[in-house]
Amino acid sequence: MEADVLERLPNPVNLKRLMKIQATLNMILCQDEWLRYHSFVEDWNAGVSMAKIDNGAGDHLIILFSPEGSIIKGFDHESELSPYAQDEHKVWEGIYDDVPQELRSLLKNEAIEVDDVTFCIWRKNSDTNWHKGKVQIPKGESDGSDFLLGCIFRTPDDFAAFATDYFELSLPLNVVAKIYDGFPITEEMIAILNPGCDVKEVFLELGSLGLRE
Image (cartoon, rainbow, N blue to C red; front, side, top):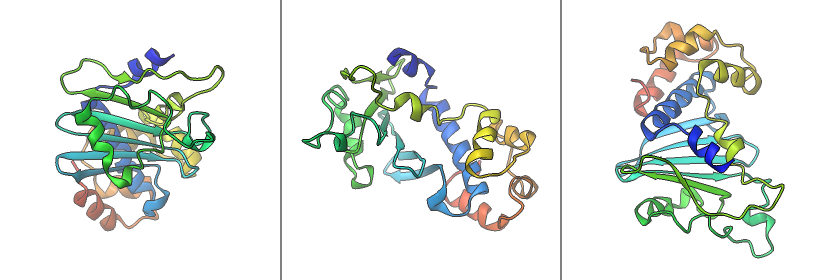
């Protein structure tokens, strides 16, 4: 199961691209920033970009992309590995133990809430695959990685299905597919996806965050 989770993860270049696509669609579909499921900050820190998934129910996934490599910190609030599920309220043994220091140091920012974690995955730029700590997960329990990594929608169909449920919007698949394929975003595309939004405001936000390709 662990190997399967890691093998399904795209390489960092493709993962970053996917996260930017989903953040772009979230900006178009939802003008309330705090309600967005996927977000992306190009210049989050010096040379570091941050992608985030936040389902609004206490679970989140943070991905940091840096010149040294990429690191993913996930938190499933219902997992037995959560610090809040333990009497001592501490990070579960093994989650961070093997993370290279140059990547672990990226998590020191207060906004990351480094102790709110149930799994950590990383990949140095010199690596050919993703890594995960040697963690003993109690039988019948989960660290939430399968669930949260499943919120990275690889295809236009998957994102459209998600949006129908989360944003209660029925999206034209051909327009979503154009954004996944990297077509320049036009006012017409934005208006089709979300007729109620302020198109100019969306353009301003996409441009300021480096999400308008």
